Image 1 (cartoon, rainbow, N blue to C red):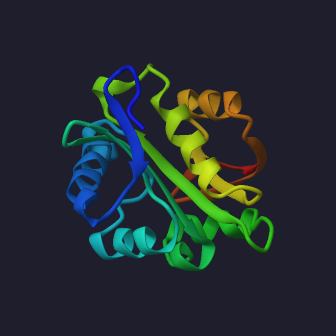
Image 2: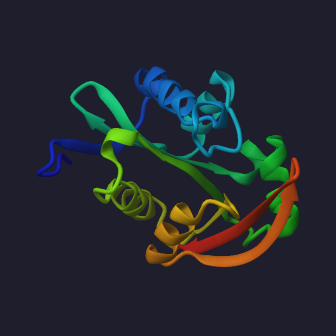
Length: 167
């Protein structure tokens, strides 16, 4: 579905992988971003095959994405493993995130649109996520989305907040 801003929200496919990888790279800490993990091509392909990955496209460019995966698919990612120790959620819970929006598109409600699109695709299931405790913008945005804090954990000398929501 394309919004009035020209951005189409949809389910990702393998053809979107290069755009997702590029946007992930642009948001790594060494480039001023706040992502807590760098997911490789194989991990992203496994996630694409598992649960819907939601993308925002402006023309052919990926300008936002939201990953989701069953806990089994991402449990080997160290920061996710640490999160699941702090709060594992319900038996059918899935891991939500990260949600990444291109710098040029921020502040326009795109994260909310990605989130709502995922929730409609996974109704009635609990989504679990983590946010660095010092990422106040993301914590505020998720609070507005109705996401609830469930605990905290430390990983790589950083403090994280675990949150969840019901689909």
